[in-house]
Image (cartoon, rainbow over all chains, first blue to last red; front, side, top):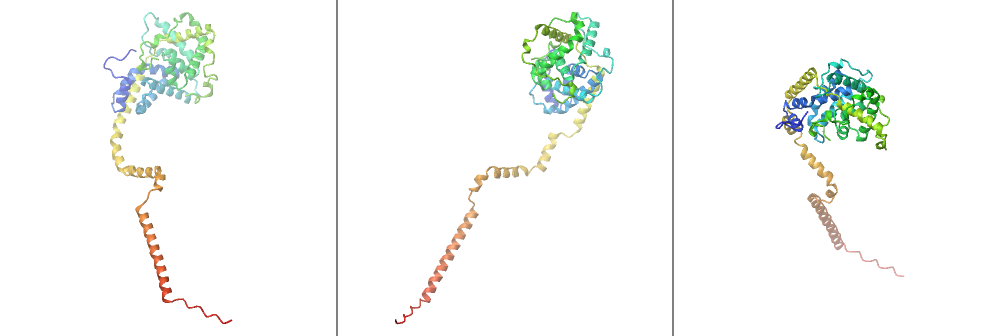
Length: 210
Length: 151
């Protein structure tokens, strides 16, 4: 995801247009961020059907509450917060039910593999990560997904989750520690340290920057 | 957001522990590898079926919003009909409420006029009474003292 092309309205302008009655503005905003919002919902909900429900619920909620947006944070931070809350609410409502994939994870589409990355290996690692993430409590999972997988800063994640930065750091550290045994067999495949793969090219306005 | 989920979701040590920066560097390195590995997982793409479903839901919302009367258009009508007198009343109430102490010292013309009239009436009445008493004394002079009986 790269920056906005010249002439493209920013997220804030789109949201203002939507609040003013523009029928198409919110659709453009949704299409612009759909993949990242989907990733958040799916990683937290750990179930494609639940994630779809949560994302739809969140988008309708954002559609209706756009007039309440005060501009105190980036539009993407606001959208992500709504999606995270919808996903956690859905999990809370279904907490009696064991969390597991309701479909075949292999069927889920992924972005085109990067150059030099074996697609079969990518799928395997994704399945491993999915299985490992399911072992974490949802709040811990949400923090880890936002920081490590989507490349958000601790400060942005703190704003999205509505908790202190210390809590975000703590959840991430504990989550990584819990994931380590599940992913240890992949240690040879671990890439060089860094967090550029996903966060690359996410401009601040779209929620990716510090 | 924390504190509202099932107990099993809670982490007993939520806050980042003091002195965590001095943690074992080897463990930190391994955790960093986990972090880097998570970052290398391919990004997900929203399935077309889900996108269509959500787009349809948003289109339905937009249609419902278009059918509803614009609150911006209806507000002045309602405001004029229902809330017209309110500002004047509010102003009066606010003035009475906030200027209460000053109101005690305000002199009203009716009160002043009434007081003056009362004073005038009392003065006239007093004058009349005193005059009447003086006239009575003049018309009925004091009876001379009785002569004392001879001793």
